[in-house]
Amino acid sequence: MENKGIGNEIGFFTFCYDPALEMQARTFFAALERESEAGDKPYRIISRNLYDVFLNICEKRRILKAIPVQEAKHGTASQLKQLSKICTPAAFAEAIDYEPHERGDVLVLTGVGEVYPFLRIHTLLDNLHVRFSDIPVVIAYPGSYTGHSFSLFNSLSDGNYYRAFDLV
Image (cartoon, rainbow, N blue to C red; front, side):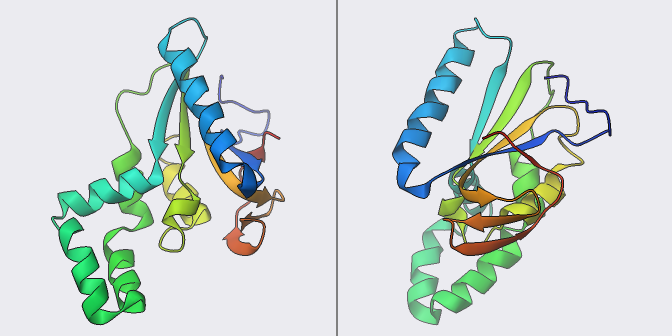
């Protein structure tokens, strides 16, 4: 909770789980959030679903309603390319951020699988470390993390990342 390590590590943590247990993972994190809202825990869960963040970015840019039309007109690959230019890891990091971060806050990111392939968790984490160096960040990850690389759904290479610690 102090978000300090002996080697000045960044407080980024993965909570990896079998993708087949997605509904149980959602229930678990919702229960943690409810417990923290009750105020009897030493932490406060700040939860962000990455798919909801994506929808909010698109809505702010006033493109949300046009996405299905553009995809039908130009194809999925073209739509993915365009969305990747708008919904960048930096845009996600900005949309996730909140102020002020308080002692005891824990940011929990869910919906990692829902935003694949236009957002990769390692690129998001690279953009979050500046904004969230003072509180722990937990990524609910449907797959595995070796301490060096992510594997989304235990089958898709999701990139190398060396700064997170697996909680499981």
